[in-house]
Amino acid sequence: MAPPRRTAGLALLLFLGACGFFQSCAVEVDVKDASNVTCLYAQWMMKFLIKYETNSSDYKNASLDLTSTVTHNGSICGSDTQAALLAVQFGDGHSWSVNFTKNNETYRAEFITFTYNTNDTAVFPDARRQGPVTIVVKDAMHPIQLNNVFVCHHTTSFEAENVTQIFWNVTMQPFVQNGTIGKKESRCSADTPTAAPTVLPTVANVTTASTTVSPAPTTAPTPAENPVTGNYSLKTGNKTCLLATVGLQLNISQNKPLLINIDPKTTHADGTCGNTSATLKLNDGNRTLIDFTFVVNASASVQKFYLKEVNVTLLNHQNGSVILSADNNNFSKWDASLGNSYMCRKEQTLEITEDLQVHTFNLWVQPFLVKENKFSIAEDCSPEVDYFIVPIAVGAALGGLVVLVIMAYFLGHKKHHNAGYEQF
Ligand SMILES: *[C@@H]1O[C@H](CO)[C@@H](O)[C@H](O)[C@H]1NC(C)=O
Ligand SMILES: *[C@@H]1O[C@H](CO)[C@@H](O)[C@H](O)[C@H]1NC(C)=O
Ligand SMILES: *[C@@H]1O[C@H](CO)[C@@H](O)[C@H](O)[C@H]1NC(C)=O
Ligand SMILES: *[C@@H]1O[C@H](CO)[C@@H](O)[C@H](O)[C@H]1NC(C)=O
Ligand SMILES: *[C@@H]1O[C@H](CO)[C@@H](O)[C@H](O)[C@H]1NC(C)=O
Ligand SMILES: *[C@@H]1O[C@H](CO)[C@@H](O)[C@H](O)[C@H]1NC(C)=O
Ligand SMILES: *[C@@H]1O[C@H](CO)[C@@H](O)[C@H](O)[C@H]1NC(C)=O
Ligand SMILES: *[C@@H]1O[C@H](CO)[C@@H](O)[C@H](O)[C@H]1NC(C)=O
Ligand SMILES: *[C@@H]1O[C@H](CO)[C@@H](O)[C@H](O)[C@H]1NC(C)=O
Ligand SMILES: *[C@@H]1O[C@H](CO)[C@@H](O)[C@H](O)[C@H]1NC(C)=O
Ligand SMILES: *[C@@H]1O[C@H](CO)[C@@H](O)[C@H](O)[C@H]1NC(C)=O
Ligand SMILES: *[C@@H]1O[C@H](CO)[C@@H](O)[C@H](O)[C@H]1NC(C)=O
Image (tube, protein in one colour):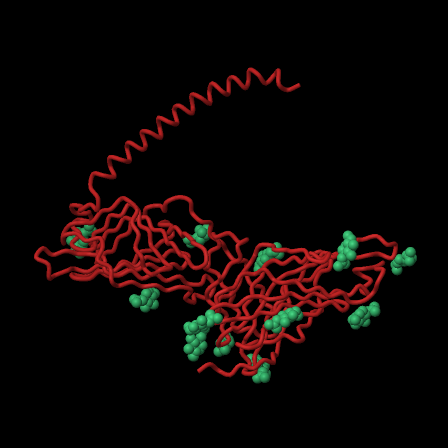
């Protein structure tokens, strides 16, 4: 049973940073329901460019920023049947609000209502008509998964009725359940698909006094390249018991696909060796944990080992909370006879869940019976084939390069020759 939701909201409001002359304020609104837990959370920055008519019958542009006095009267938690409302009032008679509706699976912003008051002489010194002007704009935001937090760092703006509304650094979530801001982000399309979901707002528990400035979210660029191959090993005493050489890439598809390359330089290997089971635990410095568990299949006539389980956990940078945890213990991949090693240079994909895959490159692994710190005989996933193609491809590419270089040389010469005549 869902806890009772009340529609009346108690809200508290924080300001982050200074609202200087040139600097816009970030507004943070945390609306609480009757049981005093967050039901609507938003933090964002906005400003307005307004074209207004002057007393000399021409039009001027005014810029309206949030002032240091912002109130939030009328914000509403919302429910299945009632729209949620985020409403703020600022300056001399200006106000802004957006309402949200939801269905089973998604929420969406419906209408933005903006009222500016041209009697504010600081902003509209020579307005012909003095008084409030209200505009209502249908919001173009796509529906967002319920319980996801909507994040948009990029500037978005739209123009309607001589007003340009500009927003940036937006984090918001209506219909918050159990007072906990969603662990999953839904990014606006303007934010690159490269923005890592590793930093989430840590705001489930905002108190009035703490004006904590949240640190700038870090974004990892989507790697265009294959990951660097790492060498990992485990020891028992001074003896190596597990060897693994592999380049690892995570492919996370929440809203947009995101590729994360694991950097071997900052990745630490840990785990356990055993006679029938061994686990390699990799921990990159950025709080990505990947565990590989290998087992021995004793029932086969020839004893083989194989990869049985992969467990991936992504932790929040700041507070270590789990952002994503995915486990598949039903693999039977990377198998080779016990005593040998398994090798696969080409890219392979381990599907952990629908939303998470691990791509492996240049794999060479031996989880059992390592002798003298060295790999034993390798059983290759696809002998020959790849090794023919690679030299041919490289050869072809080099051949092409030579042709290009020669062409560039001649063309360059021609250009130089002509330059003198073409310039005037
Ligand atoms: C809600 O919680 C805050 C701090 O946790 C407390 O100061 C306040 O009195 C509570 N309000 C109600 C109505 O319980
Ligand atoms: C949202 O706000 C607009 C403008 O105030 C209003 O017309 C509309 O009825 C509201 N939607 C809901 C579902 O309350
Ligand atoms: C402008 O209008 C607002 C709201 O209508 C009112 O509160 C404020 O006092 C007015 N200011 C002036 C200077 O008339
Ligand atoms: C809500 O969920 C029910 C059952 O899962 C489904 O039949 C119904 O169509 C859904 N309604 C909407 C608006 O998505
Ligand atoms: C327009 O308004 C400004 C500021 O109030 C005032 O100084 C000016 O005289 C007005 N001009 C006209 C033509 O009324
Ligand atoms: C917008 O500005 C134009 C002049 O550029 C004016 O004719 C029009 O009435 C204005 N519209 C509104 C809604 O103020
Ligand atoms: C909220 O709490 C209820 C009951 O504890 C639970 O069933 C539900 O999954 C929770 N929702 C979220 C989004 O955490
Ligand atoms: C809020 O944070 C305080 C201190 O960190 C903690 O004791 C309290 O349990 C938290 N409340 C909720 C509802 O998470
Ligand atoms: C967005 O917020 C971050 C920190 O939250 C801040 O460093 C950055 O300057 C802000 N961007 C803009 C354009 O103000
Ligand atoms: C490992 O330890 C054993 C006994 O503790 C010792 O005899 C051997 O020389 C050591 N090997 C290396 C490579 O240090
Ligand atoms: C964490 O990720 C960022 C962005 O990809 C990278 O610049 C940084 O070096 C990584 N830090 C560690 C310790 O791996
Ligand atoms: C996956 O790894 C995480 C972190 O090491 C751990 O907390 C979790 O229990 C593991 N899940 C499974 C199913 O082994």
